[in-house]
Image (cartoon, rainbow, N blue to C red):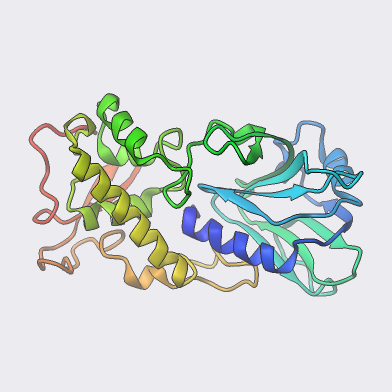
Length: 297
């Protein structure tokens, strides 16, 4: 599933190609792709027609495109997108062939590049949502359905001290905490493993034993690894994650832990270990990241 860097790559592409353009029409080809829009596909399409789209924003794994009010005032609604496992937001010439898994298509009044939501597995979704005040940044607005999502570590609004205090209260494993989107958003399975490898902490380390310095080390590692992934377009293991131009990212080649079972650790040479974790996998170095005596799973 795309994590923060991959979604940010898509956001930046949308900002370049769609900001300031006015929607001529929207077409929903698969109702499941707008299933969270309770008023239905026709209402979704109708809410976009004639609206000018503003600069997209992102929090964690969600991105949204604010819609200028019809009277030209401040935006009160946005198209909220979650890419799920295989969702793609693509821009291109409007007369190009329709993709096999095309779900939603948006055309603009200027007759230029269109915007398409392509989703093979239909786990992703789009919806028009009201914007509400952001609990983490008094100057900002966020879509109401994600108002509970925590700020992500690349945001200025992220509170490192509050994160540390929450870790100490949680009494869980550090990786579970990193995947808790109400505590810190945008970090998924891949970048949690990569951050913990860089921070030299085992994924089952009890959060109540974490020191402030260790919490800061994890945060810094998460910022570093996601920043590095952003620089090369994110992580693509297959053709399902691409940017708005249909291009894959290249960070998979630079992963230090995730997916490297039995390969040598880049620090000490020990074989990387794979453990089962929440119906997924955790990858770590048994030497650089020793298992704690009191582990929490």
